[in-house]
Length: 74
Image 1 (cartoon, helix red, strand yellow):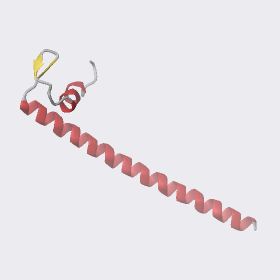
Image 2 (cartoon, helix red, strand yellow):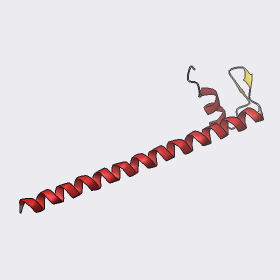
Image 3 (cartoon, helix red, strand yellow):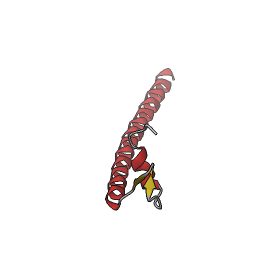
Image 4 (cartoon, one colour):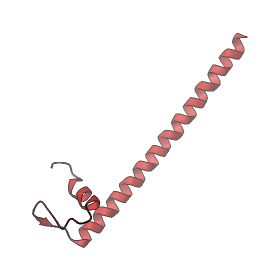
């Protein structure tokens, strides 16, 4: 598989894996792969939280503009 994180992902999610593509999986490699996966997960969660906050702020802004438009029309 050509994806750069293929090996580390497989090692992380397949806990019983002892060999992958003819290459042994060592405990140090497994620890490194798990650490990398954890860091990437945390970065993704941070990005998701930022996007969610921006989305909520935009919705509030739209709602406020809509309410002002209704008030001005009355």
